[in-house]
Length: 329
Image (cartoon, rainbow, N blue to C red; front, side):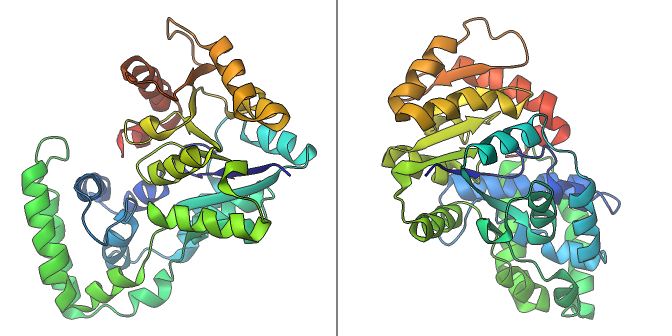
C-alpha cells in the first residue's frame, strides 16, 4: 500500500486563501502581511503554545469584523486555480492504487472545496475548523472599537523591516488587550492545522492505515510544513519540498522546483518500486547544475549542508507559480 500526504496551499493550489480573504476589505492585504510576519517571528522563537500557521486564528477577528462569510470562503475554493499538473498527478496515483491524503492549514470551507474537486475523500483530509458565521455573532461594541484601532496601527508597520515593532505591538494586542474581549475567545477557538498539529494529523492517518511513517510520502512547501517534513524524513519516509521556502527546504529528503506538479511522478514511481534508495538514484541522476528552466529541478537533500543554490531555484519557481503568495512564510 502506497500512502501520500499533500499540503494544499502550494503543492495542490497556488493561492494563499487567507491572504485572498483579507483582500476582500480595504487594506486587508497589508494587514495580513504584517500578521503573517508576526506568525513567522513567533514560530522562529519557538513561542510556547504557538504553532506555525496560527495566523489563521490571529486574522479571525478581522474577518468577522469585516463581515466575511463562510460562503465566500467556500466560493474561493470552488473557483481557485490548481497548480499545473495537479489533476494529472492525482489521477496517476489513484490509477496505481495510492491512498491520497491532504493535511492543510487552510480553513475547512476552502480546503474541502478543493479536495472534493480532486476526489480526495473528506475522511482523508485534515484542515482548520472555522465556524465563522457563528463566531461573528460573539462580537460586541468593545470588540469593534478595539479592532478598528488595532487595524490602523498594524497597517503602519512594514513587514519587511519592522520586526521589533511588529513583535512588541502585536504581543501587547493579542496577548494583553484582546483576551479582555469576546474577540479573544474567538482567537482561542480557532486551532489551525499547522506545525505539530500537522504531525498529529499525519500520525492519526498513519494509525488509521496501520502503517508507520516510514511508509509515507509527504509533500510541503512552507513554515507550516517543516515539522511534518522533518518527522517523515527522520522516520525513513519520503519528505518532499515542492517549490519550498527557506523554512521548509532544510527538513526534506528531496526537493522539486517546477511549475508542474506532475513532474514529481518519476520520483514517486521510484518510491513505489524501490523506496528511498531508488528515489535517491533517480533524483541524483536528474539534478541540474545551472538552475535554468522552469521544470524538473530535482535535488537530493539528505546530508546536504549548503542549500543556498537550491533555495535560489526554489524561490524563482515559487514566485512563478504562487505570485504574491510566494513572499509569505
